[in-house]
Image (tube, rainbow, N blue to C red; front, side, top):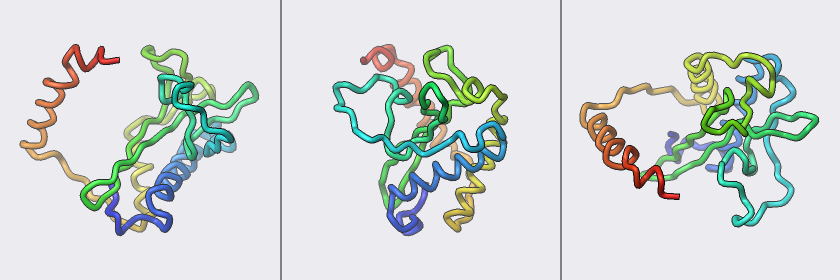
Length: 168
């Protein structure tokens, strides 16, 4: 999350590109096989919403991160942003490995034929590099007891409900 006043010139779209560019550099450093193969996606033609695949990693947006390969490029990183209360929250996913839940999506391990870095070291390296790029200090905080209780209630009442899981 970044205060609106701390965004790079160009606003939220510039933050999106900055974070993804940092991810490319960090992954290329931690996974030498990724060097030169990771790139920002620049789709030539947007597809109509009706033609888009269900899984977000099968869709491409400007600035997503792809692995270039001779048989076709594969999306391995995507993000979304939300602006609220004077801040922009950017959140996303990195496909480190292929998932049993979506076996049609190869991860970095399969595409680069190398083990991905441990998630905790990767997340720390990303956070430190993004904070340097934005010239901001990291503030790490734990959830308060009230925040933890609220999160548990939402998880139980909403996300654990069968109706939520089967809504589509």
